[in-house]
Length: 84
Image (cartoon, rainbow, N blue to C red):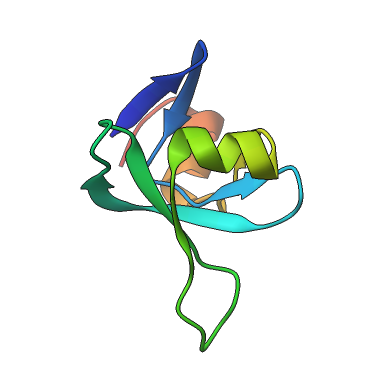
């Protein structure tokens, strides 16, 4: 699922990294103000704080999706032009 915040499209299905280095993932819930609720996921063994998306970007900075590993099917598609 994606959402738009201040003109930026954010992919809520991926871990997002804030400008301060913290990592966040959508909880699949929304706040009373209809903002996606994001949970901090970079502190193993500790319950992560949960913040509305607009508050998160205001206090932790802009978000960037965490890079994903390239799959063999993507390599195949790029090299041959055919999907598996």
